[in-house]
Image (tube, rainbow, N blue to C red; front, side, top):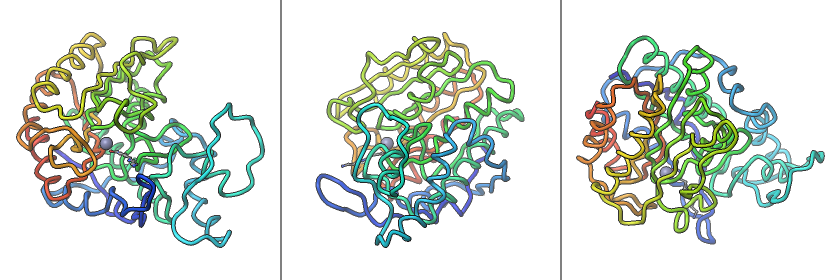
Length: 334
Ligand code: Q9C
Ligand code: ZN
């Protein structure tokens, strides 16, 4: 299977994140991508397909913010990485936002995703990696892998969060549709619910979003991912949430995935995009499921058996020492 990654994705390295009342080292490290790249032979560098496919999903003001916020932060005399502290919880009236702190709240979901001067470049190449993998599948490959880092599924049209800035799965889905595919399914098997992906396609009937994740009653992102969230308007019924309790191991996870695959099969997609997080691993430091390395191959075989062309986009996974083996196990299933 071809895989894509650009070393410029490594440059984003925030120092810390706000966690349970204090600043702790940032969990989404460059070492994660290095571990995956080391485990997979010959990842290819993506070509540059430009900003248009990014702007087909993301708000222009938001993209401008990602590019310029670090310089504005520094110009305001601030130390460290850009991080918001005030969020617009009510309707967003079109008020003029002047201060960097106002913008940081406007364009973010949480305080666990700081921006550095290198973030935009890393996120840009993460998006280019997923677009390259899409082209491999469009060219006839049964499956292709994008080592997306930073990850994407918590990022919405106009907000970052959960270590994510550009929603790579959504960018690929939109590019596939703009390139002539009629229906795309996204299967999200990261430990966390992909609130950004769900939000982007909430009212759309041409992109099916199915997610298996830790119950938002106990886990980030808390406000989204409940079973009764099914989409609306043209998208009603095109969102499927399958929350599972902490402690979930292969059998229950696999049963949930069978449900998701059956729903996707009924949707009859031209392409399946898998938002793959290995933070479902038993040894993950910030998560609570109990999958083992060999389980990823089993889950991948079940997906491959459905017969759709598959684009795999990397999301989370924070047990760095096991991450390469976990990703290799998943890819082996294809
Ligand atoms: N105590 C992905 O796996 N953690 N993102 C917030 C606050 C955010 C995970 C921690 C977890 C986001 C792509
Ligand atoms: Zn995750």
